[in-house]
Length: 231
Image (cartoon, rainbow, N blue to C red; front, side, top):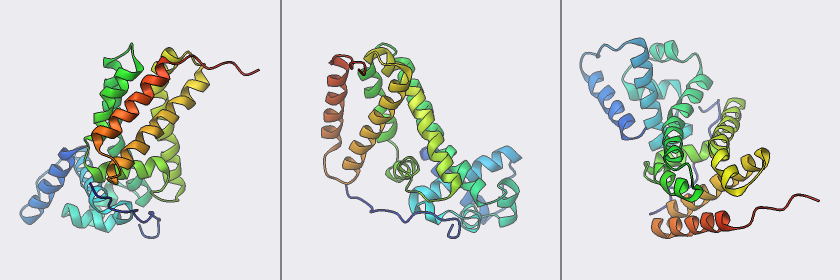
């Protein structure tokens, strides 16, 4: 698997899943003929699907009001009707991309309440099986490389909080940590997983090898002694 390279960061000046791609294709097809009637909420969801598809293939820097209108086969006025400005579009596209991963992670943890390692193994495919471009877009949001606007920074911090919180309970239970330490430890584990994912994405290691090493790390952590209290 070859790396696509680092995408340029998004600036306001320049500025899930296969289902979203299907929505984008349906929208483009309908634009060639009579526009299909959609309710306000369905039209907004369709536009978000197209925006996510655009980011997946071309990066965050490609997302703009005019680019979305062109890709969706609609007018800029309609885009502005659903998103008041570019920051609103970027924010809602980010949450649209993130939501599927978050829900899949929650389901994996809920299915394995008694073991951190089992929950991690179950959750891995949620990220590793998503289209590479969508994973790249999510990584850029988490790592803070998608752009430097205040809105994107707020999204990054919220994503960190949400992911840390969802992993906090199993981490706290299995490693006997206090709440604050469990939240920090959870985020460190998450970032370790994404580091493995980037090695796989760049072709430095195979997926099987990356998963095996990461799972062994979690096994060793879970099997170890609880950390000592600070003196």
